Length: 491
Image (cartoon, rainbow, N blue to C red; front, side):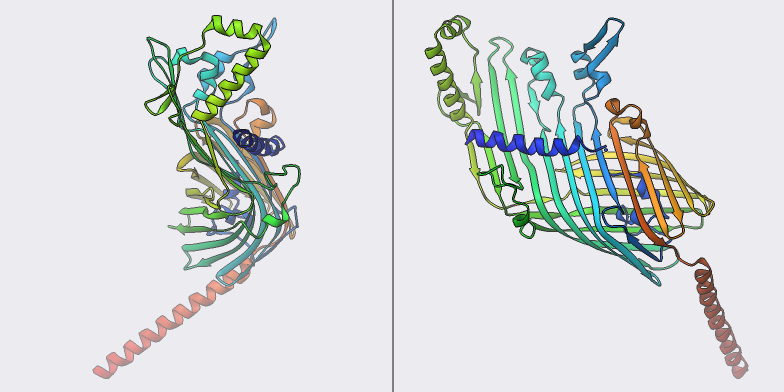
């Protein structure tokens, strides 16, 4: 049972990392500022966009490939000198933070379109999405490299070690409504159909070394849920179709934007707020230290080391050595048992909180500041983005951003939008530096798409505004005339 647990976790990690190695980086922040692009409403369903109608090109309208790797970089592991390259392990572990991230993201839209009716904008979308978050402490590398002797004064604790990943279909229907000329609100309910999931519900591991006897006390608590696209009893047989309508869930995007005047405005949104209920091929694996005899102490397993002389004698006799190893394995499994069930479970989607303010220099140029927080298992990955947006020649949109993501600072993004008649193409990245130094970059991503896009008729809008103004003036004139007649009558 313990081996099945190890195999499942290894397969889950490999599944996410194999996909991640094909990706080029975290959901693009540049798209948030592309007000001429209807797909910016997926970052805020109340994003004010100039759109009458759009139709996405199937499988090409919105593709996003991403990875965020905060710590494992080539220049931290390898030192290049005149004599060659050397591995600098000490330098690497010293650069690790208390919390480190390896995040993967992928989505592709299969079908999408939107249409505006007066003050109401409606859009429909069907996407396949993958999101994976691996959060690990510096101890994960420091303990095996430096050894437990580096933790005599304080224990080595794995407090924030977790793997979370979800692969699913997303069907959404978005609504955006203009309350008045200053306020827009938006909502997008989503039906989710889960394909695969890895969820770390609880993870705690602690090594305490006695400074006098050097005995090591180990404490452990673990709870991991999985729902994979193959049956655990037959890992070679994929089981995608049977999962499609059984792991169902719901999510919602909410947003609002408000213009204080023609120059200043603000917007707020929370997206991907929801859950998925997992019922197919589920495994719930739990483990904690149990009291199985003399090695149990204070809720943990006490390891007093190995007698070197006895170990050498055992190694000289293969039969005794093999039997001893088998006994040691049985002992460890007794103290660290794995409890496995196959119950349904529920996970939250990885919600994102976004808050921005913007300043319109003129009708074609603006500056913006965005805060975004990715919420994963009660932990938030914060980021701040400063952006410039510009439109030129009525067909070219240019965007430039600078982002601080977590505690990484070398993130310079660019975006281009080309509107050739009804054809709208766009390409963007949160970190153009990664194209020149991919092994040393924390953020790497590319997002692109092509769609048929018809903008609102500005002349019609102006005519509509004039009609509204005419109606208001007419009402005001009638009101003044009525007051004048009433005043004359009273006299």
